Length: 221
Ligand SMILES: [Zn+2]
Figure (cartoon, rainbow, N blue to C red):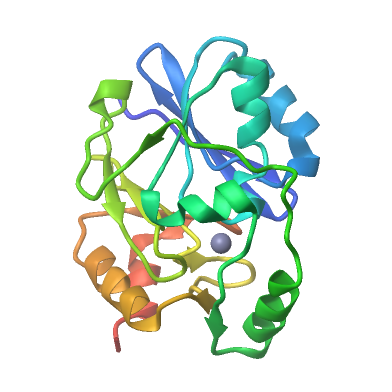
């Protein structure tokens, strides 16, 4: 039976909780100062203290990775991510990125001035393109989708749920990444996602939206 994906609105960034066998997997963790909210959500759903099997990071930006250290230290939870973003979470240094909108340029400028080392941590394991999550009791596959960052990943379930991190967003309206480390890699990743048999996009920011909306806004690419 298809289990719903729970979305936690961690102020302006999402964390998603997925049922995995008799436990759970958390995708992204929000910024560090929403820890109390994240912890109480996970406790109230029964995912903490013991049933959270794994945290998966869609990428290394600290607004997504801000609570990994606390989950590791307080509850012994393992954190998995793509190796391509390792330096971001171990040093807290944001990547240099480009933008093609004014809002994006403003975000690039602001994030280039922020270096937050308080949430730095060492991941426990690395995920690769095509990797199955069955060993964690989740029927889903990892897709390497670089562009926003070089280590960005997406997660696809057989039910057609597609968690994409910041490769797509829905702050006001669904769109492709405002900020990118590598524009041609981002385009290639969007093309790769277009070819999937998916139903719903779960972005890093804003509400989920239908897969057809994504294919229609990127049709010209
Ligand atoms: Zn990001």
